[in-house]
Length: 364
Image (cartoon, rainbow, N blue to C red; front, top):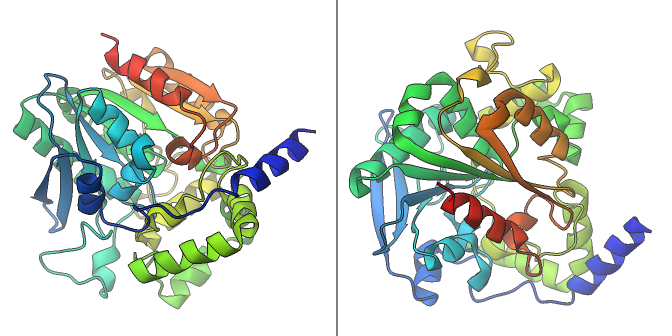
């Protein structure tokens, strides 16, 4: 009965067009279109990447929120759902929102020494996205605003922060006020996500290495618009694909058509694959075999996460495992029957997680 209900709703919700004025557009254009004042900021990491931060200007006294998306995505993630976008929800409630994009994505493409067509450019895993990019952005936002930062990560954006925190707790205790995680994945081996299941059994990484693939997912506006057109013409097929590999929940737009994917290094995927093989939360194998992230170090900053029952990647089991490690330092804000993985940011019918997150943010 439940499967039949989801399939029916999936067909029903595909009647809505996948297009909007924001489809595949840039963050500056989207912010301008929706009437938000913003600033562009550039920070340079110690290893040479130029990272772009978009600051949605606020005159309130509330602390700044730094929003970091997951793998194969950029700052567009947080402004890709029209007026219901997460960044707009927080900005409308007085928070100064800073939108980050990981190295290698369309807004953080420049490097002091390397080009994207060079192997050295892509020599980073999700750990460096936390220990270098994350720390650089957090430190910058705190220096500009003079306030401790609220870190808001989705999917891998949450994972990389937890990994970095475990390695340098003093830094994050000094710079962060709170941590929010939506679709907050850490134990990737607990996923029911089809690509990760295939990774577990097929062990495809050696083939990727031999082929010399350094990255995937470069953003291209024309390709993004072409996919949006394809999904407009064949909506149910796109919905079915989303349900199989991303969300077993039909309450959302086909989100990829709202902003397009973006680049990620294959080393980051290798790092995840290693954790799938080894069934845990370990550092990249180049750091040693089965070197665990010490989650006992992740303390002193309140953490709140939201999880979807239909999430094939950040499963409820992942959340309860993390709770067992972080104990009272972690609050499971909610587990939502109506949400999957990308539907946290793309739903147009369910927003309880917005309200619950806001309550957590407002708690002293």
